Length: 462
Image 1 (spheres, rainbow, N blue to C red):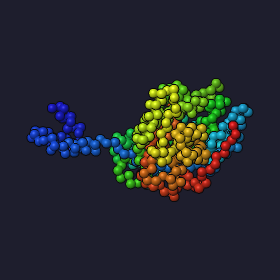
Image 2: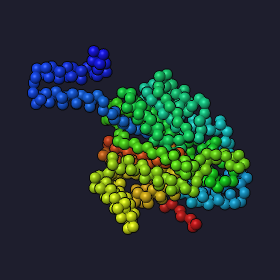
Image 3: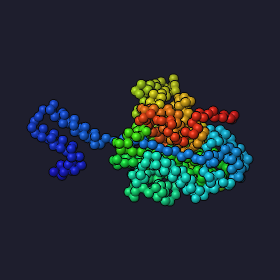
Image 4: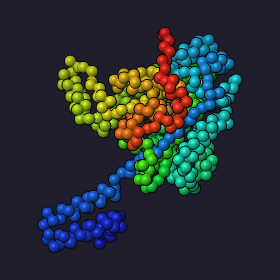
């Protein structure tokens, strides 16, 4: 009797009545053939009740820094000199800068333009407010969304974690509801953007008819390194200011206005390996100067993490022909180790029309292009984003998608593969399906000068 009561409490009423009908059928000794339609109806009802919610990407807005925040090479070199770097360190920073793949239009917050740079907490907070307040306001006003209609808020900023949190800053500024489900992530590195999407997705799977706002950025102002450890000096050159606000929904009516729907999100964490764990590591040097160390093994670690990630993602997206070729290659190498050949790399262009690879640096993009056997045009969005905006950390993937949209390349039915890397070490993949042709005339961060791109990036002799 207790079991019967629990069932009636947990199963929706319509399914419960179907079970009762099935019980009556069995009592009346009706044939199996006659009961099949009832069983099919029960299965359909179960599927409708428990199927996962579809997550729609309604829109997103990337931060566009004003032109006066550009920091050309000459300004950066001047800053390095004022930070009392010795000649060897200064030459190293200049060499890395020239080979970084970053152009003269990339921007730094106003506090970094000061001489000497202002790395106070107040300047970091000002940078966060400048970037996130702007993109949230633009996104909500663009779609006439009342801030009080936001049900879920997820923000991420890896190296700046104030109290109250960045999520609380947004809630206070825009007057979100008191029962909003908010989360603030820190310390997750450049892959935190897709981690935030995954967290919002899980929330949307649980809470019906909800809107989720995801915010991604990195605060550059307080994180300059002033020591002489070369592994920590690289970050001074690569990172620039940027951020993004993303509006997600699981409401059926939003399918008509959404740009994309999320098909897959695969996360890989290789932190159990010491080399991977230490590849991107915040620490203090021998003089107690704090910085983020980038190890020499970083590219090897990234390639290994990507292989692990696509081992899970591949069966979800690749056609059977590519899966068979890959499987046969692995089997042959195990059976005939002496004649071992390179493992077959699946043709991911049969699964995706567009690629957004984290613009972490020129070397990162080069390695991913080679590892995935991609063409120059496949990584064009990543290279141009790095050149114009620099490494904007967790938001870089969205600047790349903006580039593709501004070029008018993303069409209805196209699939976009976003690949993010971050400290830990993590590799995360998201697959989006375009729901309607993107209009290149709709303004985004690339609209003012998309006609000038792609550009030839200068190559310096080693």
